[in-house]
Length: 454
Image 1 (cartoon, one colour):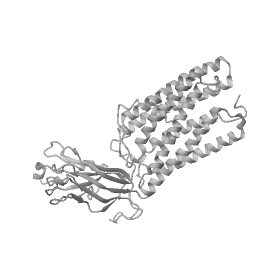
Image 2 (image 1 turned 90 degrees about the vertical axis):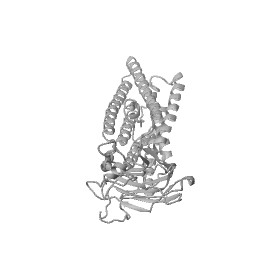
Image 3 (image 1 turned 180 degrees about the vertical axis):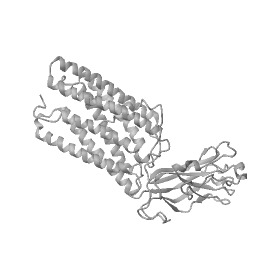
Image 4 (image 1 turned 45 degrees about the vertical axis):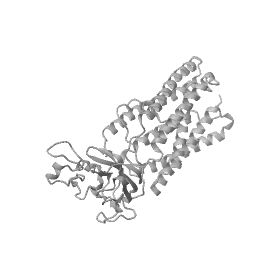
């Protein structure tokens, strides 16, 4: 229901930057330019967690059911005015995260370089102008390095199509690298296809498909309970219960859409922008309505006051602002995302949502305190008991959220290279479970009954 993580996100946000997730299998390159990194020029081609193939590990061809990274029509293009010489090699480097130290080197303990320098070439450890790499200690056939050069006045150079079979589970990285300072404005086009044994969904994302399937079922069960009570006591329904019905409906739609988003992604390798956009929008609407409902309940709407009075416009304005900020953040984080490794949204998108969440929580607990005092003064014991249970549930949710944020911060600070990608799905899944649990508590406390109106 609520993503309470965001309520406290401002606490650790200045301490670290999130890693953006490329959720994809088909990585397309549309004229990306090489960027200078040290003495090399680099384009990041993708990073994904991949499970090992089920097939014979000595089979060198990628077949159906295998895990692989396939290069298709990867083309390098240089401007016509720069096409008057034969270039040094432009190389594709594929390596597991555990072999990251095997890329690059230094001469006599000096500054580390990716491209082979004259000093290193004299030592005979590499060829000048090419990427420095050493065979992996675990598998001498890795990392995979291959490339192509421009000949004469060629403007285009295309890598031969090939598949790299994955025989060991791990986080894999692809970089396109060249060491030729004369290759100005070089761009890369084409695509690579990354596949797991059970489909195209990246390893880090794969558990989420089953998780959202489970959450869809959980919302259906909750919906059956709620709608049966709603139909049974429809004459006793008051506005707050209509709002809860809306949240449950939005939750069902959101979970189902996320499941179909991942299922389609797993089947085709291309993330469906339309489904993702709908899932993001329904989720944002659900969180906005959830915050407003909890705030209205905390103010005693329908219990100690028949209307919100002059506060109505302020509540609507806060809700609208939260919706806009959250929608932008979620769209940037999810729509079109295609890999297992990238920072979440920028600070200027995260911070407004975190501040608004914090404001909601402050206003909610302030209002709850005032409402509890009024109920106690009027000796409305039944309503006071319900509100005390509601306050306790909110307090537990807040405490658990703070604890989980501390764990999330610890997890990310100790997993800089995404080596724990197989368990990373638990972090976003937890927030869904927590918000669903809070929604269940609210449904139990305010379930339609013959005494609802009273």
